[in-house]
Length: 131
View 1: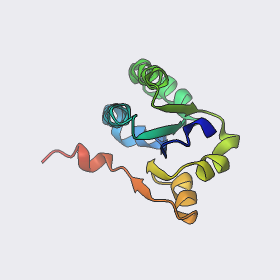
View 2: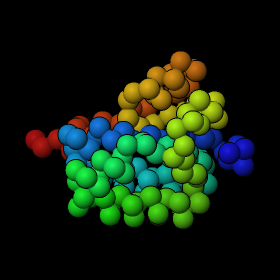
View 3: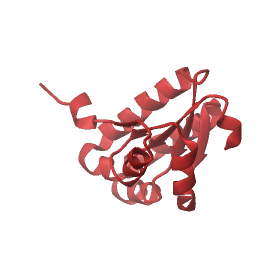
View 4: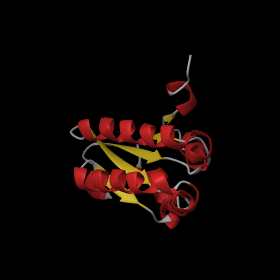
């Protein structure tokens, strides 16, 4: 991951629990977020930490979204804007390596906050609220 150090590094994490409440809106939020990351790749590098439960959850509970999610993963991996990490043993090093955090609230966000790194929690319900 040291090859990323030339730019600011943003740790991105999207929890599988986001899909429980928001289903297709959760997928849309990931897509919009990745579009911003890809368009900003000259300024930031992204470490997308993959929720270890997400694939199994989508495959079994929301199979119609699983293929779309895999396409988003593939596009990110081919975009050149960062790295995709799916090894949970690296969580501590991801927090050390990043300059800031964006994504779901929870353990990683708390670890980054404890390490005095800026933490931005996305709010899917506000983005897709129907007024």
